[in-house]
Length: 295
Image (cartoon, rainbow, N blue to C red):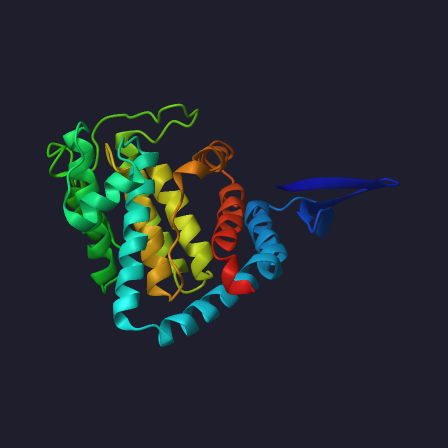
């Protein structure tokens, strides 16, 4: 976390930004001088300072991941690419649905989506939404335009129209709460403004931010707005992978077994209104997932 520190020398006070982080088993500290007063744009300065620190730690590694991933894909036969993509789709569908409470196992999800074998004694809603998520995933892969409210509404409708047609593809008009979270999503009356602000931010920053940073922040910001009555987490993870795919990076599967740290990072970012908390979790998770491309 980036914090503001002050030093008093004689009668004068000086302000600094300070961030501590662990690297190779040791705690490191970085500082940035702010001046004799704290400026109004200090939160933006904090964000820039944070990204400067982690540019070498994260983004250079992530660019190396993309480079080696691209090399691998260039020599891979089309049938092997298709099989690998299907394997990712199954794991991604299993995990993203499991995070949201699905009862299907990975094997049941694979049998359903690969072979059309419906698991016995499992809720039909879980089955239908797994099948629907597969459709959303492949729709995302084929989508050639850019993120917009219209495509997000379409993906939400595709995801939920078979199980919850009354809310599928619609902006919620009632207040919701997130199970086991202290964060309270915005009121329905705020959603139009927040969504417009989100897509304005996205269009302004999509060419300025590193794609991995953009993917993380799109996920965080959209799920924090929580515009739908259901499906917010799943659609935000689809949006995240749209950005990775669009920019030539391997897509990220947020695994169910890592859900506690994932939830914790999201909640802390939302409550403290500090994007960098989730960003730090996200980058570490991404690098760990694809560390084979760094060898």
